[in-house]
Length: 267
Image 1 (cartoon, rainbow, N blue to C red):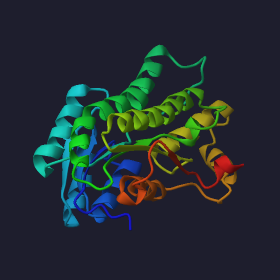
Image 2 (image 1 turned 180 degrees about the vertical axis):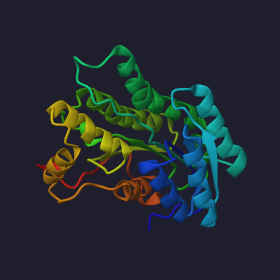
Image 3 (image 1 turned 180 degrees about the horizontal axis):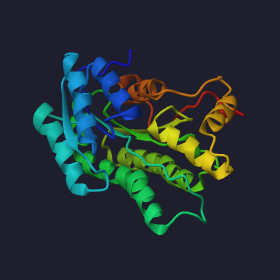
């Protein structure tokens, strides 16, 4: 189940964290990978690890805010592996500041990566995905990394929540547009809870700073205590969901969101 044999995937922000874990899991499931990131050394390390396992992967420099970088990364997939079946819009940033504290430059960066990057990836990959879908029973797939912060309001991170809310609704609208056009590109989003990654750690640091105590360990435990399942998530928890949405097992899913949060949004 959840096999990706013969599939070619491009993942943004795939050098580490959720993106890196997803790349490795997709390779195990039989996919050929293009690892896109701005972290050259980490990206090449991820590719080397995948290649050492016997799978095929290439690294592409990918600043998701730049059209030229997207065009190059997509070309790497098509020229090296012959097609593009899967796009994972994973790259994202977090700015732990409130509405009144954030600067315009910080806001513009947040929007550029979290929203413009998803739009550009979807727009520029669509022709290749549409072409690959012609020879697949279940079409091609886009998986967008949203967040539970894109489903419910956030008292501490309203601007991050705003960008992820945009990704959530863009996913639904893109799914409908591609269906209307007959492209056979499924578009779904995944909504992680609090995950133990570098970005997750940034949220703890930001919240500790706002509390005035700067006790990151205490904040981490406080957040953990709010998770009904009793632990924070790890990148593999999300990677498994992404692989499912990208696989033919999710062939009748489009325009929906998969919540992986240990039950946080159920409360």
